[in-house]
Amino acid sequence: MKVGIGTTNKAKVSAVLSVVTKHFHDILTFEHISVDSGVSAQPMSTEETRTGAINRARKALEETNATIAFGLEGGVTMIDDIMYLCNWGALAIENGQLFTAAGAQIPLPDEIAEQIAAGRELGPVMDDFVHQSDTHQNAGAIGILTDGMLDRKEMFEHILQQLVGQYFFYPALTGSKTPSQN
Image 1 (tube, rainbow, N blue to C red):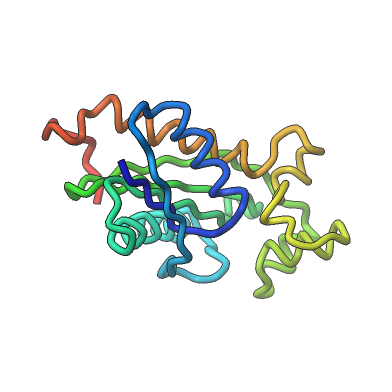
Image 2 (image 1 turned 120 degrees about the horizontal axis):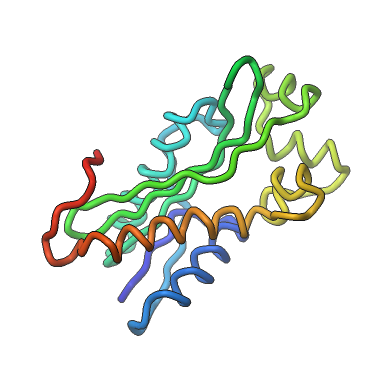
C-alpha cells in the first residue's frame, strides 16, 4: 500500500512513519512531499488549522497517487482571550473518504502570543525564544512549553492514532458509512 504524506517536516513525517508501520501490516511504501496547505502560513483558528490538514491530505493523495494520505497542520486558536496551540490531522482515502482528528492544546505565553498576533509565525518566534533553529522540525512549541514532556512528533502521533483508529473502525474501503465529514 502506498502512503502519501503532505509535508516534508521531519517531526510530522517521523510521526506518520511510526504510527502507520505499527498499525498496518501491508507492504508499505511512503512518499512525503511538500504541498500547499491552502491556508495562511500561520493558521489562526481551529477551523483554518483543520482546513489546512484536510487540504494537505487531499493534495498528497492526488499528487502521490497513494491509497491513503495524511495531512498534518499546526496552528493557534483563541479561547477566552488566551492564545492556544492547536493541531489537526486528516486522512484522505482514494475512495474519497476523509477522517479528521485534533490533538493537544496548550496556552502560549503572552510574549509569544503577542508576536503571533502581530503577524509572525510560531516556528520563528519559538526559535528566537529558545535561541535555537528549526524547533518546528524537532521538539516544537509543545516540547518547549511542556519542558520536554511531550514533543511535536509524539503530539502528532496521538493525532495519527486517532486517524488510523477511525480508518479501522469505519471499514472505509468496504463502503461502510463513516462519520459525516467534508
